[in-house]
Length: 287
Image (cartoon, rainbow, N blue to C red; front, side, top):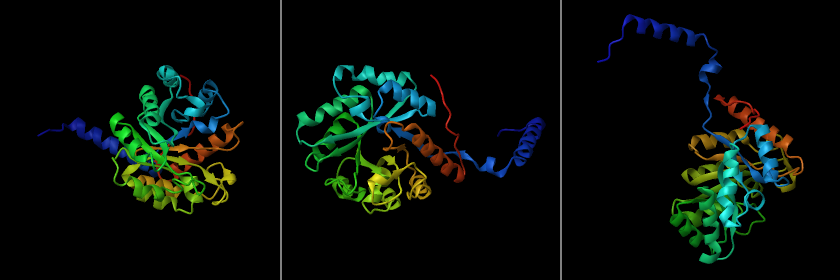
């Protein structure tokens, strides 16, 4: 048995007394269970060094990288070195995508996995054709890399809504899951909260954006300025113990994205603070 001496008892009493004098809001605040990240697509008009500088200005460190613009798949023998540039700058590469698979052959699928292996990225946002899905899933097992299938709204003939993904992936290995794009989900006429609850433990990534008109992709605005039910989405994600990132995909004003990206992240942080979590404001940093 552990015995407490008089000094220990007195110290504990003083600490409890001091804590009781703190505001309730401070005592209740705890670290947010949600991780807010950033899609590099928002900075598609800029080269990697410029994007890194803007991420530093915003204080953002977690990046879902778009291969087409910021970490090309070729030449393969330079991928590891180019990925390391981000890490040396203090940026964590949390995922890559969207990566498309239109052809159902090993020769068409394997290069993407060799790329992810070289970049040391364990998760990618994918959009395989229905025909290629089984093959891609087998490569996920072979390379031990997870794929989060991305829904692209009513224009997408393969995966309009997360619910269109559900029946196809249920029999597949657990490394195949969902990337819910909430903007496209809303445009597909699907309740984003219902989509989160359906995906459950196989929800591996989220892309978040906001719309002034739930039916129009051209109506995108900064997060918090539209009709997206952000607080309800965040609560649903927390309720399912979502371990992944909520990645902002701010797609408008490509030549001047910084103000909208900042406004979006500040709003999402405010939502979490209003929910009782201790979330620091955006703050610039340097490596």
